[in-house]
Amino acid sequence: MITNYPLTKKQTEKIIAEHPTPFHIYDEKAIRENSRKLYKAFSWSKDFMNYFAVKALPNPFILKILKEEGMGTDCSSLPELMLSEKAGILGENIMFTSNDTPAEEYAYAKKIGAIINLDDISHIHMLEKAAGIPNLICFRYNPGKARTGNTLIGHPEEAKYGFTKGQLIEGYTIMKKKGVKRFGLHTMVVSNELNPDYHIETARMLFNLAAEISAKVGIRFEFVNLGGGYGTPYKPTDKAIDLDYVSDGIKKAYDEIIVKNSLDPLRIVMECGRMITGPYGWMVTAVRHIKNTYKDYVGCDACMANLMRPALYGAYHHITVLGKEDKKSSHKYDVTGSLCENNDKFAVDRMLPEISAGDILAIHNSGAHGHAMGFNYNGKLRSAELLLRQDGSVVEIRRAETAADYFSTLDFGKLEKFKQENFINSLK
Ligand SMILES: *Cc1c(COP(=O)(O)O)cnc(C)c1O
Image 1 (cartoon, rainbow, N blue to C red):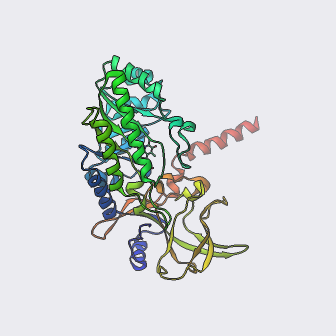
Image 2: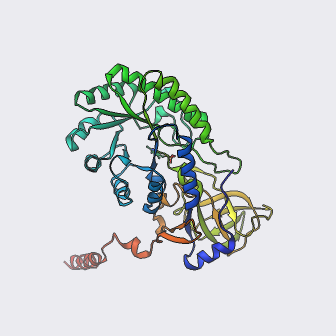
Image 3: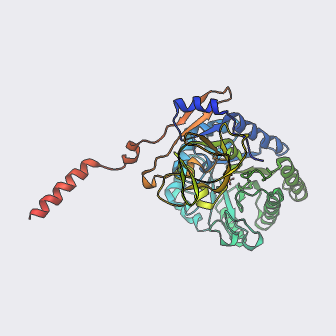
């Protein structure tokens, strides 16, 4: 089941009168309700927290809402750390989970008191040189052959992330010697996984590993970070993860492993992004042209620069034709953008009601990795982001880019001089 678009065509047209298409619109009420559902499911776990993966929806207005719902942030770059601070999410409410990390980003993360989650054993030395050893450290585990991944993230063995088990034991031993007193353990092995048992299995794996390392190294873990990767329904036939089921399974594993080995209390945290906001965002775009050649094409005023997932992974994004919700899907279309790349398609061979120029489409599940993946190739500009507030009002939480933004990194004064110099040189 996918989440219905929350507005009528009429309501949408009223919004468009003030905020021209294309835009992404996010449903605040649904995001808050969904966040509460997650926290309720894990209410048995003391100090449970989700560190929202900023990359999914890097907008400070959204981060502020999630902060109010008790979340922190999971950041992987300096600008993401800065964005988190702007939203008022600070210190240990930030998890810095990066890879191939530059030294200065570790230094910044340490300075602001974020939890540093190292991706590799060689980073210990680099971190110490760049910033000194923090009093709390987390390592990312890559289980290799012990687990299978999924198509979006690949198999752990092929993934560039994380420590091997041997490296974890060595790494924690080094950190203990250096006087570190507080420890965390993290993994992230799948992306967009809808199978709830997989997520329970990941927790069980981390609990067992925490128990083993505690015994071998003689340290006590403060938290395990189960990572993100909780899937959301993209297709009408997909089934959402039952969070209560996952939570029950994780609690059972916790009692069997953590409580039994006297490692209780062990804080459980996550860093889900997609599951928190993905289903509660829609990209709204108007149809410019209908083109009938070897196939029938619907040409939109948005393109893959505004929502790249279909072009990037062949991802399915459901499309609602506003005002035609009850009409039969009788026509087969490719729904395209205007970028000069033939994979600039939101849907291929999609059955939809008959569409005319001027129709408005809502493309579902744009609340994660939608606007965030935007780019400027082909001179395409990123769209605005709007927030549908709980009282039904709409606020713009990011304006659309203009041509001036596109040119802002160029120096045209220098260009003028450059031309003159070439001219003078050519006379010599
Ligand atoms: C992308 C990412 C996440 C969030 O993944 P979702 O699929 O959005 O839940 C969490 N942790 C790390 C390290 C990531 O790279």
